[in-house]
Image (cartoon, rainbow, N blue to C red; front, side, top):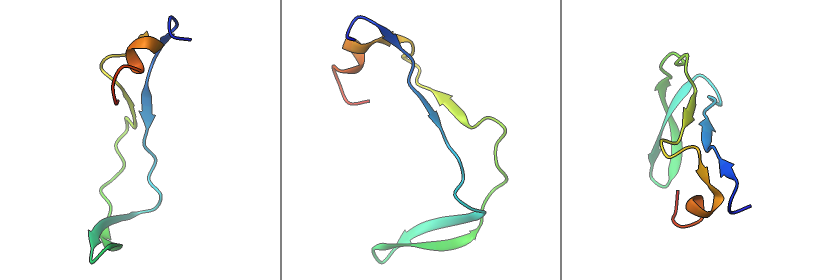
Length: 59
């Protein structure tokens, strides 16, 4: 619905306890991960806004 208001949020969850780097066209383990941050959820600063606004450009 273009007129309804929506909140865009991102919940980031670690897949495992390792840090990765992209090297030679593939992902490789690059050590232990940092401790998980207590706040994992990020809300887009334009939230809330209408569906029409979200569809006007790449988010």
